[in-house]
Image (tube, rainbow, N blue to C red):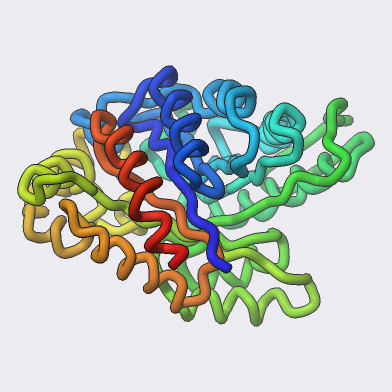
Length: 322
């Protein structure tokens, strides 16, 4: 049975607001909550980007049931893998085993801030594979020493570990990333309803056990369709370049330039907008038909969250589970 999640979108809400949204989403009946981990928003209009791990710590204390997940953290440059392991173990302990560590190869938008440049995709994949080895070893307990092409770890140990290792999910987008990370991670993350990704992931994981496939879908629910399209265009037009382009752009000004020709019609064609819940259900079903086991919704616009969550509790979640 598919589980349905809610996205704590840190690029469009402040830290206090995110904690409140987390409580309301659990009360509305969502099964899990994922949180983005950025240093910058994609666009100036979004207006926020608090530190995800502080917010997750707070969320772990005000929720009781929902699973929590980063969607996703980049353990390559801004964070060293050994530090990510420590953070993930701490959040899992605070949440009593409700945390999954979602990882990805990152975006220049967030990683360039440390002033070390931005490596090409194949190098980032090498770095992520080493990071997974380091994090997994630290989750296993004991002292870890590691010398690789990209990282060195000297006598590191995570002192506060949960009884069971934190599950790790990795974001993939094509054959290369699937082949590399399927044997190394527990679960798949993807933002497109691509059945080929799922089939490739399962084939590459033969002998490694079952795996969740966790997707994400932006929506802009609201009582007025035109106003919803306007809001989605203002805050989410950045999606138009696709992830291969978006990963290389260094800041909100670059995203504004890259998305200047994305029209409201383009947004409306790609994102369910307005009061029609059937459009959201159909979009979720595409993920399910592709083999995804979990789908997290992103409601666009901070000011619309409470009304969306109330509608999700009354109508949307029952329709999805119908």
